[in-house]
Image (cartoon, rainbow, N blue to C red; front, side, top):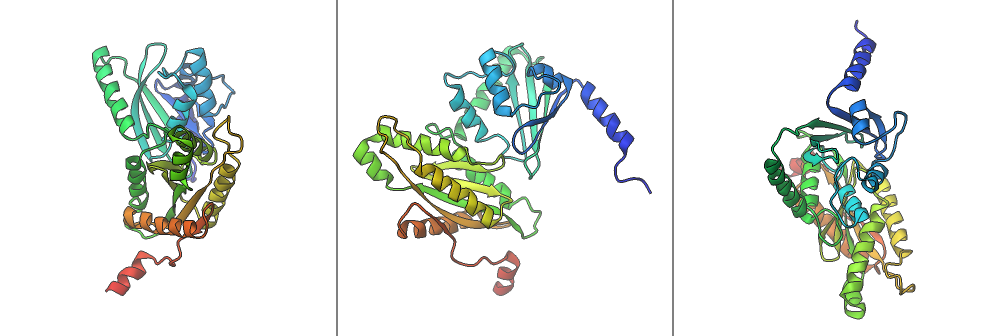
Length: 320
């Protein structure tokens, strides 16, 4: 019987990847670099024994004007917006350019547990005018998936990810995670009393505060006005509750208006299970009903869907 792990093959694979012309890297669920071949390390100026977090790597290279070309007036805002979409799909492909003049085709392949394989190939042979057209196309796609004010994914992006989550089971009915609908409390009063500039500051602060508590695979999107959607893949209900309770506490202590230290705000949340095969709109409706219950109980709290869940098979059996 052959061993389950072919040690020689694994060693040869490691050597081939190390010497490959493609740029190869592996990031863990915390987005820390755990492996990179020599080509990847050279392109992004990473020492041989260094394992930086991806945000730290991008930040230092941006300020040193090396590695990835990032065109922005506000790097931290760009970074938060990019992190809000990074690692949120099972597979992503895009083009990017480096300060050394190379143009790369990059792919990111995600495991459900948050590990990511990144592979880049040099496509500098594409003419400059073609690159510009392709880059303009990518910018337009990215803009359609991004909320301008907060930099978070838009409703379109978030609902598409929810549809992928419930549709990726191959027909098997099973729990795939949780969905929460979040709403900033008394937001109309905030706008009317303090003005829209303060309202905008609250929305931005809310996005930044919640992002600090997200895991790599979690998805936070703004779906309209003061309402947000939080997708927690492969998460048990008690873990989802703990995440949201930490978010509630963090927002209570946040001060979004520097010159008004006494100003504070809160939010309410409704939480629902997500099961494979369900319609995304049905899950959203259940979470929204739970949110309504949280509002009716006094706001600044989490409510969980009241109706007990039934597996799809049980529901179909009853219908039959």
